[in-house]
Image (spheres, rainbow, N blue to C red):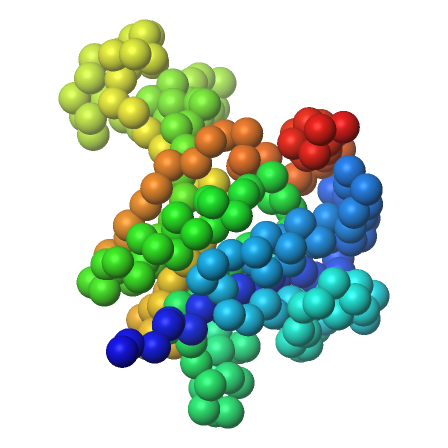
Length: 240
């Protein structure tokens, strides 16, 4: 009988935040923001370990009080321009030296608390069902089409994506319904194999599966307007 796969949730939560100070533990709909990601991970039918990756003592205290493990990252990986890859490569390298690596990991950013456990399990199941895949990313249709975007050239405007690249004359003037659908990475659910990060030096690799998420589940909190929208979604979900 095959053993159940090991799947770890690694929740990145640095202390610094410019848009909303102390964002990751700011109360929203009655709980610290990070509580939603921890609770969702603990309710997943796949996740076997929940780890909060942080350099911040207060975040670490809150995470432990909510039942998560804490991995303390170096402050050099907690700067404004620090990348996901740096954070995850460092932590997985430490686990690898300890002889502990899971079959898959899932990144659950605290500032997307409106995702659901079902979203999480859908992403994990998709990766586990497709051994050829390096990763899985949740997507949703983009509200702004890149063919309708512009860049400035001195005093003039130029299409961000020149027409010769897609063959649609004056794409910026076409109805959205006539343009090919485009999608954005929601950042709410990212699932990957450790080897994608450790060996391929990438957070996605080359073979990327996807699934679509309900936009209501993908509110990415970067400012107070986002915060108010997410809080309303969470309150309505809780029946408040």
